[in-house]
Length: 336
Image (cartoon, rainbow, N blue to C red; front, side, top):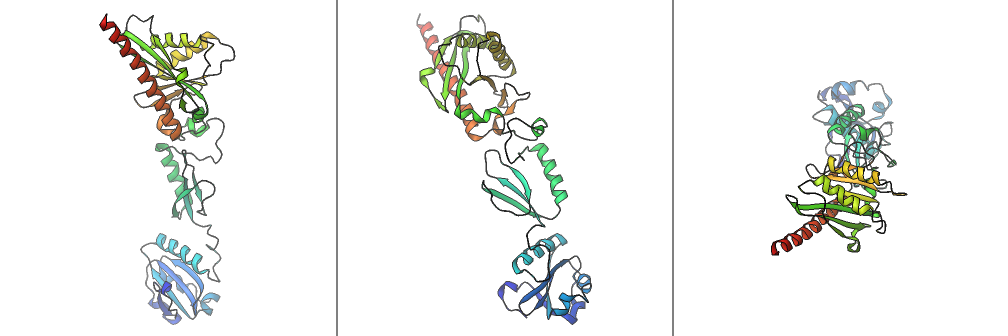
C-alpha cells in the first residue's frame, strides 16, 4: 500500500473487503502500487463500489482506498480535486477542469461578474468564488442577487445603456458620466439667507482639475425672495449669453429634478448654435445624479471612483466659492 504522506487521508482495504466499506458519502480509489487507476465519489460507498465489480479498473487494482465525507457535494468537490491531482488512467471526467462552476468578479471600477469552468485571470485581476456543482441553480441565485445588487455582465462596455440598466439590474458604466475626467466641467451653486445678498458661483474643471482662470461669481439681481430655481435660471441665462467664455462639455447643478429641468429649459430656450453641452444635476438627499438624455437618475456611488470624486469635488468647490462671495457681500452690507 502507498506510504506517501499526501495519501494519508485514505483508508485502505483489499479488494475482498468491499463489504467492510461504510455506507456513507465519500470518495474511493482503485490503486495498483502507487498509481491511481480510478477515483470516484459516492452517496453510499459500499453500494457504489460493489457496482464496479467486473469492470477493468477494479480487476487491475491491487487494493482500494476511501475517504468519508459529510455530504455528496463534499464528495464531488474532493473527487474533482483528487482527479486533477493524480490524473487516474481510467477517469475521463474532471481532468480538463471543466465540470465545476466558479463565479468570477473582476477588480475594476465596474466589476464584471461571470460564470466560468476555469478560474484564471484574463486581463483584469479577478477573484473567484467556488467551486459550485449545480450550474442551473447558480445562475438562478445570481439572477436573484442582481435584482437587489446590480452588477455588470458585458465583457465589452457598449456605447449606450442596455436592457439590464432599464431593469435596474446594471450600474451602466456606459453612461456618459464615466468620461467626465477628460472634459470641461462647470459646476454651479447659490448662497443666500432668505434671499438677501444672494450670490451664485461658477467653478470650472478641465481634465479633472480646477481652473481658477474661469471661475465666475454672480450677484443675484432678479429674485426678491428665496427661490433657488429662479436664481439658478438667472445665473445660467447670464452665463450662457457670454459667448466669449469657452462653453463647457458638462454643466453640473447642485439640486434635484426641479433645478435639473430649469437648467434644461434655459439651455434649450437660448438656441445657441453648435452648443454641445450636457446638463447634470446632483440631488443631495440620496446623491442621485440626473443626466440629460437619461430617463432615470443614477446613484453617484455606482459611478467609477474617479467620476464619483470629481463630481463631489466640483459641487463642494462651487458651494465654497458661492459662500465666500455671499459672506463678502453680507459683511459689506452690515458695514453700511
